[in-house]
Length: 397
Ligand code: ATP
Ligand code: MG
Image (tube, protein in one colour):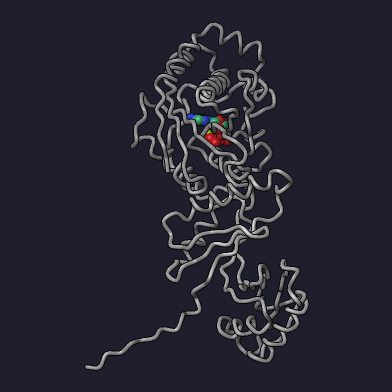
């Protein structure tokens, strides 16, 4: 039997590299190198385990070199979750000469006759003997000749982008939108109060978007952390970890507080609980060198979220409390929760607050003196101590 050597043509879906743009946002002065270093580190973590040939930073872009067997979809999925990326594109690369670019157009970009097309060239390499306008014109003319395309600058059906730098041309026809924001790790660490609700996971994601590393603190209704009964919280954290690679969750039982708070007037229990949560959070943050707390609180979404109550809550701690959702509409929060992937989990039943003994009509304008005088009659410091002692830390990757 004759044996054949089958010569495969390189399929047109094999791209040379991914071009990653991070935009100008937040790139002022001294921050820029820190930003870029972190972004590259984070991209490395995001694509860990995928096949590729390395990464380099060039002229305000990151170039990720692909291998022939690189799985494009997996790279796209991973890069879409990295904060700090403005957009990215899978590219073909050739020498930055008009002939080479035309050859590449012929080999890699098939256009049907009559397609309204446009070339958008950007020249970062100012040493080249032509301008980006020249490239637009020459390659546009080539598209008409080679594919019988029509040039349309205002309403193209197909736009082919050309970026010229380091003597090379990078060509692509699809831009994938990134998340923008800042790379996680450039803004320090937050200890974030995570409930099982819709808001606090979204708030955590927004903090990550501003470059914060986020550790989580959850107060649960059980005697001790229980993987099965606290599964909802772990699932929320797992979804969020896709954006931040790794995190910790502090699981704190609140029964010591409950035992004390039965002595307090029902309408003050909610504000007492909030102050208790913040006090515990502050202690844990200090033990772990964390300078800031985060929460999913909103202004006036529920009747107890008033400025008076926020003021009374803040008075219990010297740490700043970041509340990224303060001014959001509920529907905006829900829309974000759906995009992030936490909404469905958040709406599952779960007991995350001592609702059994908290009044249906909590104090809406809690007076600090009254709150403090109630607290003086309770033994909250022991409750705080006991809750902290019973805290369990779970690492999530
Ligand atoms: P969420 O949807 O995040 O629960 P919410 O609008 O329901 O927010 P509240 O339930 O009043 O508001 O809680 C306000 C904030 O207090 C939460 O966003 C969260 O940061 C924090 N919080 C509430 N319950 C807990 C809990 N069991 N553990 C940790 N943090 C909590
Ligand atoms: Mg809630």
